Amino acid sequence: MRCAVVVLLCAACGGGTSPAPPCTSTAAPGEVAVTTRVSATVLFHDEHGAILGSARSDAAGATVRGTIPACGAVTEVSDDQQLITVTQLEPGDDVTFVVADRFPTGPRHQLSLAFPLVAGASTYGFTPARSGLPCECAPVFVTTSPAEIGLDDCCIAADGTTAIAAIAGDVFPFTYASVEHVPVSASGTTSAAIAAWSTERSATRFVYAELPSPQWFANVAVAQLSGALDLVLPGIRAVDSPGEIQLSRVGDRVLVSARASDPDTAAFELVMRALPAPLPDLVELGTLGFPPHVESVIVRSPGDGRPVVSWTTSRATDDEHAIAISVHDGPREWTLFAPADQPGAVRFPDIPVELHFGDSLAATVRIMFSSKFGGYDQARLRPLEFLHQLTSVPHPVPDGFTFRSAQL
Image 1: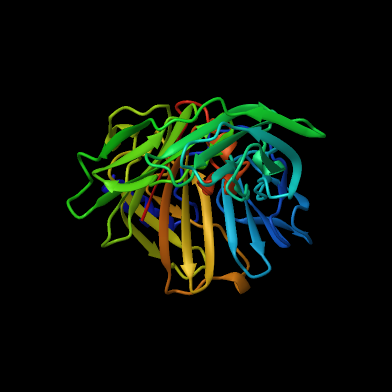
Image 2: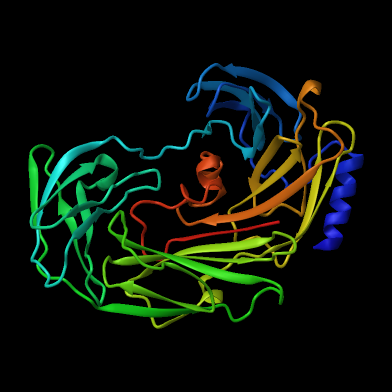
């Protein structure tokens, strides 16, 4: 792989084409639609990176159109000159840079939750589960039954159900309960009840037997899931490897997030994997399917405004979905999104002279896979959703869901 990088990189510097997999598409030139995340200018490129045209989007969420050939590209240039390019597009594609997520609406539904009292408990806490990270499902604390809980839309799954995690305060051992998959009435108050409390917990030890090199270290975090919702219970849910996490027996799946890092270079590899609950006594993190890690990154500025970035990886990236190469010039960033099977080097497309980056550049390379997407053909249409690992997690999270990435 290292030899191939040298050949392709030199070809890119001396020639006029981008080192990239050959374009096998025979599609005729045609229109693509681009929805911008901010007010921006959109550039349309041919398969070699030349500019074919541009269009102006005057608002976030506005859609513009332009013509490209098979394997063409588009670049969104925001008004503060941050750039993102998506390559290997096809005529007819509809690319969006907008990331849809659920946000708090305030309490819109009411749940009356009855529960048995626990000897010695002075208070009882009830926390609605979340359907997304921006959601704020505030806990409710009461001293007697029932608990009256206001539910934000964010605390209700797409199928109209909710889940509540409960704790009995000032009691040892830790005492908890949950109600899950509770249908919520569109109007009025929904009634539900906790049948019994529990103190049962399961312990799982996490180890990473073979780190990429001795100076690397690993850690792991877990999220407990019920249907499309993330249950929130007190306790330690993250630990360095090797280490142990104790989990309450709630939910039907667990999302394990394992990360290995090199403190000297800031390189990391990450895997998120949904597993059935409860977890086994021992999880060897290496079996979760980490991606190849990025071993080296080199960025060059040939003087024509089109940076060239080359890299090496610990093994072939054919099983991954996409690669994101970012070039930094002070506060400015330009990210290029491409299929993961790049030949170890990429030449960025042409941009107007007034947007050219300087000669002192830094670069990062990130390799990614998400089973939420069927491959690059789907990922290229929602690149930012794919790039951000949190929006790459679907709700509900299916058994066996996998997201992985590696970066240097």
